[in-house]
Image: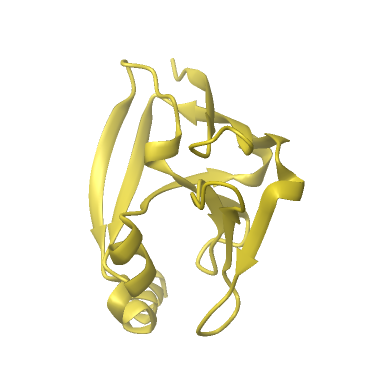
Length: 130
């Protein structure tokens, strides 16, 4: 039987707080694109319906680069990006794995993602699906 875990998370100073529903096993992506590599961001994809922003919307500042599709959201007080809207998954948030208080029973599968070559990687995935 699959179980859902309710987990709390947020930025370092606590101004931005959220709640997520997670299954027993999650996939966490380590990306090598410029922003993820420099910030140490670890991607946990959470469908919009399993994410609740509890406080701090007014404290979020947005940064966009390259195609401008991804909405990188940072706490204006402490600078932490605890979640953002990725261009790869418009139906989900990418939550920073390090910003979530996780249960010990959670199973984590680590995956590397070649974000440095994002367009090539996405086209390879599309070819496998078609």
